[in-house]
Structure formats: structure tokens, C-alpha cells
Image (cartoon, rainbow, N blue to C red):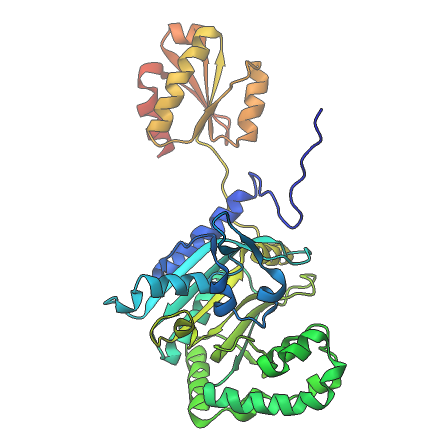
Length: 425
């Protein structure tokens, strides 16, 4: 016997019984996007590496440590996508969607992403991300809309223990003033920080605030807050976002330490977290923010944007932590039980008729005894079982049993489909 091939570390097989939950979540997300007028976009699973180094940022952990990059046979540097925003914006620019009559352009995506991380509970090297991007509007009302869409997904799926945290990163002027203050704050003692933080000091000092290794350093607690550097325009923008969230009934907490470390992020930043007991150390379910400047970075015209991304795996973990059972139905309409060779042959055509009429149906393929066929019908949670033997076939009859109440009727075989349609109604 050959050696068994194992699944790659950090990946998972999603089996029948679980895939139905994924489908339910995906369909719910699509339904909500339809209400909000976000349309689906599907981009390649791999892109030119340059897209992510420019679009995600050279100083990020994603680009520095986590990307699956390789040289293809044509000598091109390509990368399996680690997130969805850069690809979506690249498509927005390449397909000149900034010229569409309907503005802003509102898009959503859903699909596998790849990051070389240390696998742990709820974190995989291949994971599925759902995200939205709204491109073309500077209105703070769309910031509130994006946040409300994210909250709607979690709430409509049944989650209750949620916490929304928001912050403002200000405009370019505010960011620069804060950046200068951060450099002055950390520079005298930067040697006490990890090598990543030392590299970030000049390139992107705000990323230091997001460091896991040095989060307990005393300078972290006394670091200048971005809120203290917001100019009047940035402060007014943030005030409006908060007002709109309050107007639509969304509770939030302000956290001046919440950062989205990429240079092009500005104004609104937010995270949605799980407050469920026992959920784990990493509580963030969803993160997002405004990224005016990204479209220009990828070669397009000046276009404001805002979006978020969430992990389906972490969403499922949050549902488990709160004990939420998704209303996934695995029942079938009819299971055909046959007894005798002629009856078994006849059920092939009958099964096809049922399915063609729109019913979910199944039959036995293993020549099992009638008792075992009934057990199979139970496992399929069949609503009805139709029993056909050779004698019944000769008499143009078929027995139909309701698996809910045990009631049984005998129907003419040649009009079985019509009678079954009436019963199901």
C-alpha cells in the first residue's frame, strides 16, 4: 500500500454536513449585499507580486512574511492573493470602472486567500474571505453604510455578543503631524523594540502601535494619540460618521489605539469583535477602513474608497461560541424503496421524473434489504418513502409513507407524480 498523502498544514477539508453551513452564510451575505446594492466581482487567485507590495504595503507583515510568492515559467513574479482589496482596486482601475454612470461603485467579493501564518484556532493558511469595497465617494454616510452592512451580516446570522470599535486616522495633514510625533516619541528608545518596529520607525511608525511583540512596552501606553492631531476637517468628518451610526442604531466604542497600518488609510477605521465567552484570544471578526489614496497607488485617478473584510472561518467559530445553530435543512422530499428486480429497474425512471419535476429524491444503489433501505431513508431525513415491489408494479400501484406521522396511502403508479405534487403542497 502506498504512503497516504496528508493535507497541507494550515488547510482544511470542508465536508458535507459542514458545507451546507458555508453555503447558508454565503447566501445570506449575498442577500444582504443585494439590499445594499453591492455587486459581486471575481478576481484571479494569483496576481503580479508588485500589486500587493504596492497595494498592501512593503512594511506590512503580509508582504514581508506571509505571502505565497513564486516565479512562474515565464519568469514573472506572482503571488497567491493574501487579501481582496488590492485585486478589487486593480480591477476597478484596469476596467475603468471609475467612468461608470452609477457612482459610487459598490462591489463585494468572496473566495480563498493565502497567507503563510502559524496555524492556530480559527486561523488557516488558506482561508475564505468576504469583503466589500465602495469606491468613489467622500461622504461619511457611506462609511456608516459599510459598517452597518458588516454588522447586518453578523446580526442576521444570529450573533449577539458583538463589539464595534472605531477610530479616525485623519487626513494626510493629520497623519503627517501624528507621524512626526510618533517618530519623536519612539526614536530615543527604539533600540528596545523588535527589529520589525525598528524598520518601521521611519517608513510607517503607526505600524509600531500594532506590534504584538512589544505591545506591553511602557512607550506604547504613552504614545501620542491620533485623536490629538486631527485637524478641524478630520474631526468634523469623524463626528459625522459617529452621528450617522447613532442615527441608524449601531452602538460603538471609540479606541484611539485602533490603527490600520497602511500609509493610504485615513479617516474611519473600525473592527468588529466577538465578546462571546471562550471565543479565544484573537477576538477580531472583521476589520475595515477608508483608504483614499489606494486607487492612485495602483495607477488610477484620484478616487476615495472604503471597505472591510471578514473571515468566514472566524464567523463560524463565533457562531459556535454563542451556540447559534444555522437553519440548514438537509431533508429530501422522497426516497424510493424497491423490492424485486423489475421494481428496482422501474425506480431508475421514476427517480428521474421526480428530480425533473423539481423534487429532491434518492434511491438505493447497493441492493440492500428493504429494512436497510428504510434506514437509509431515515439518514436522508426523507419526508416521504415510496415503496414499490414487483407485485405492486404489476398491479400499477405504489405505497407512499409519510415519515413525519407514519401515515400511508396507496397510489396509482401511472399518476404517482401528479398525486405526489398535491401531497407536497
